[in-house]
Image (tube, rainbow, N blue to C red):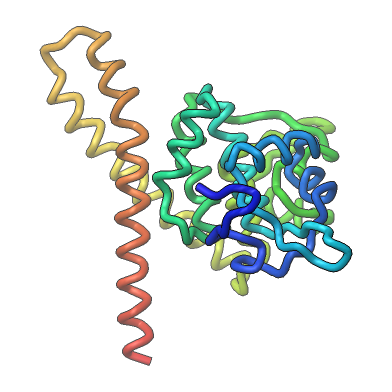
Amino acid sequence: MTTETGEGADTAEDTEEGVLTVDELAARAGVTVRTVRFYSTKGLLPPPVIGPRRVGRYGRGHLARLALIEELQRQGMTLAAIERYLRQLPPDLSPRDLALQRAVVASWAPDAVETVTREELEPRAGRPLDEAAVERLTAMGLVERDGDGFRVDPGLLRLGAELLDVPLSQESILAARNVLIEHARAAAHELSGLFRDAVAERDPQAVKSLSAHMQPLVVQALLTTFQRSLRDELREWLKEG
């Protein structure tokens, strides 16, 4: 955990040159400047890069960490619990790693889907979105039009918005999405069968308790296993090249 005066591994310099003022950071994150300063004084945010005229500049790492903090709060965690959670994370997490953490946290909620306006969509995504970007997110299933608004899963939207910068065609991204959905459903089916057999003789309350405790653990295990497996596959691919 860092403080306003400490050295943090997740500063704007590590993610992207400090390009946001505190007002711009707050607007992009959908919070107030007062909230940003409060989190900073609590050590929940690393210090900004001090630029010309002693103006603090923030980067994507700050934006991603703010989104994670807000998600943890939505899950009902106190500031003390959030501080403990953040302290346990590796100090060198990239903005994308923080977005993955947020997606994992959001998955704890039974139903995280929200309906937002067009104006609220950009703060949820953490970046400006033109109509082409909105259409692409809609095609990927990350945004669903609902009358004049949009239905979104905040935990996935910011992570999905990163795909807008990935140098892959939309067809390739959709194909990858289908692969992930297919294998995730297969894993969920096998795991639910395993858990069902383990609590077959127990009362319904025991089943609910098991589900509540196991869901975040299983999601984190799947995420970690996938990250390691993908890294190994990419290493083999690079060796062959």
